[in-house]
Length: 393
Image (cartoon, rainbow, N blue to C red; front, side):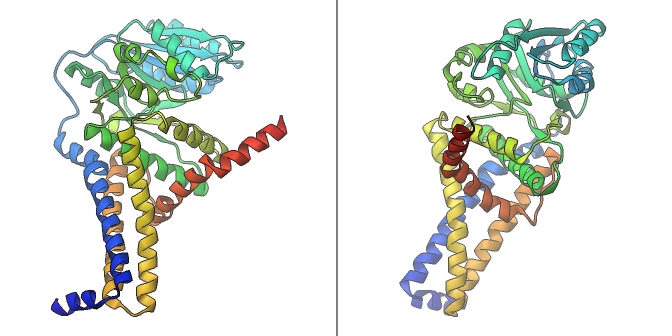
């Protein structure tokens, strides 16, 4: 051991500085993984029961639909047949559909008295029709507790509503659920799987640690009081999205409960293409500008330390290997392996409760690629896209 220390002491200052940077960024990454990203795993170990005592609130499930006749036929009955001890209704807002959606809904309404239908005219022009549909659904809702999902989504069990709404019995105003998408073929499918897994454990972990900043509109619940506290969607009607993250920031939500049980997951059969995935990423990046300074700073530190860890570790391995500084070389390799093993453990355990693939051999590539991809589409790629759209017009 004394010989190893002596070799480190005698190492050139530049190499010492490089190794110090590797260890610093490693420490920051391990902090995020153990504190935030592993928080859902810790919570699952503590929550032995997915049930809670107490009276359930009456609930309105809000669903927006545009040309979704097949999904409405397949999935609305799954919402209407939920096993729930209190009263609940499903409010479907038809967003100017031109297919047979309205016929499907009217037929279902004849069979189910707790199905309510509303609509937004196709001719109505708004920057975000989704927000207007949600506003219409909330105003039409008979009950104070609201649960949101989409027409192309299906719950994984008939206890989905109970698992989400049970937290409101403890006077919680916001409940975050999780969702996953059906497998999309090819590399883009693996990228979407990883991105959804990482973002889910990220916002769930932050919420568990007392810093909620977003959710997913595919599986989200809050009360009308939260909606009115945020002044509805009026403060970000100029954005296409934001109904699942910005509203939580506008309402200054400090605490949110999360639901992690297998029966609480929502599965979307949405067919994502590279273009639709890119568009969703652009919207999410726009929304981040509205997050609180502390959240934006925390997210930036994680991403910056991640990229700098990869870069400094790679440089250290190459330079120390070429110069035969084997002690320093070994430290850099061990740092890389340690982070990989911690990352693999956290990702694999989060993927189990979420029910999504882990892709252990691709995690390093996706982990490094996603920040670069997001930086590109938020800067150079967006400029090029705007020029292309202007040319087409």
